[in-house]
Length: 277
Ligand SMILES: NC(=O)c1ccc[n+]([C@@H]2O[C@H](COP(=O)([O-])OP(=O)(O)OC[C@H]3O[C@@H](n4cnc5c(N)ncnc54)[C@H](OP(=O)(O)O)[C@@H]3O)[C@@H](O)[C@H]2O)c1
Image 1 (tube, rainbow, N blue to C red):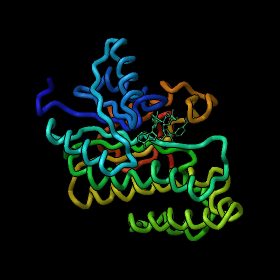
Image 2 (image 1 turned 180 degrees about the horizontal axis):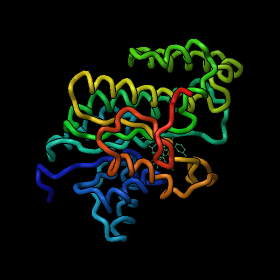
Image 3 (image 1 turned 180 degrees about the vertical axis):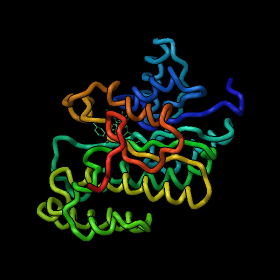
């Protein structure tokens, strides 16, 4: 149906919430094939049906970001059917809004989805990015550095030569704190500390990966974005914005931002902000 040279955009966790609206916006404006991906085939296909009913063209593929086998299967599929990836939106994420302090087991599960998955995707899917690709990481205002309370990490995460390994140590240090109990969990990043650490780690990873792409001479732009406080299932319907409004800045980065905009943290109104203020 699509030619090898057709451009490709991919959204993780595209079956509902902000991800669904990002897919919808891409279907309307992206000059190429748009993949709505979802971990659950039935939920994914229902979302596709909704878009088709609106007259939009969309493709579907199962993708569970926490499963290496699923990411591998998707990468094989994409590389067989397309010349590469032009836009990748890392949107899939979890948060239990009812639990501001989680057990170690729950914090680890959250980290698997919100952070460790990015490392799997980087390893398996990033090799298929085209040279002028765009990656958009859906972070949060809870992904600003000021959410962290441990001085050693405030000092480490701003280093110009920060490494992926150090970000991993940061996340693992938090998980150790979660293992040590409630007060240690809260001392690290306050309430919802697991979510905050996952999004701070995502943001830091964005900047490190931009530096690495630059060093490798690849013209790839990777940016992260706070979509606003958005009324979705994640927030139990609370928030300031509709999911469509939440998709605005991610879509701006995917479609309109100058390609020279690289390694930035973008606010929901599309302005760049300092991540480490
Ligand atoms: N809503 C806000 O106010 C807000 C603010 C800042 C940042 N964000 C971020 O925005 C992103 C989207 O959030 P949302 O509010 O739209 O949440 P949502 O409505 O709960 O949607 C989350 C999406 O992620 C998917 N997902 C979860 N685990 C997955 C996995 N292992 N593999 C693939 N997909 C998975 C979900 O799929 P299922 O349907 O299968 O569960 C769902 O499609 C998240 O990264 C979130 O952290 C949201």
